[in-house]
Length: 182
Image (spheres, rainbow, N blue to C red):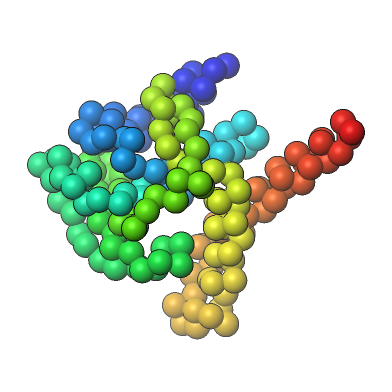
């Protein structure tokens, strides 16, 4: 099964339509997918994983200007990859479903950490395996009760622990495979 067939079978309809909207209205070469899309692309050959939302990094807010006719954005600041970042958040309503969109404004898209893959038949940039592995493994210590106190969210800690574990397992399997061929 090729990637387009796999994606069509495994991406929910509302997420396919959301991606089509993004593809039709913004320059995807100015965007790098992170979070769930990057995890999906990095892990789809190893693990079946749903896409729940769209997290993207941009280095210029003009990239999302064409979307402002379709959706309304809220603007906040957050810490993303050790950099204070503006984030433009929105919900796209499609087929009575709400798909969440986050656009993280960063000073650069970290070209050394970006690779290109096919997603629903379209080439997209996303953070690579090593970057996302490091991200999830580093997030685990940030979301403990000792650090978060009353703001502790076990679901977020579990998500990063699970994804970090998947990346670690695949990296270990790849390392063993290389050692066995030597």
